[in-house]
Image (cartoon, rainbow, N blue to C red; front, side, top):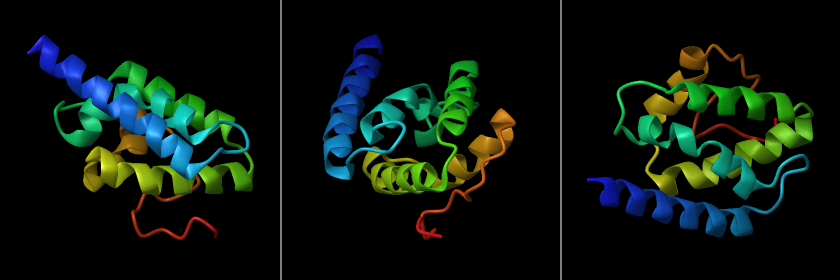
Length: 117
């Protein structure tokens, strides 16, 4: 079981690096760094954990504090829109994350959102 989890994490980390190169940099934080920062949320987001972890919520809060300008938030929005389907993120879980972590995000979590607004 431990080997399977490590293997999955290595695959996700590899995917994060590839997606970061494809998605390009964010003004305050490169896409790949933002995705790596959210790795503690991966078990919850893909449905293998029932609840969010403290490290996950800390990461969500940290990213929310880093991306303060509209261009930064738009870039993160595009980054996450591209990465979420490739990582197997369950949309309903992603939508729950801000409330579960008690973090107010100014952008709705929705795969159909227009990040340019």
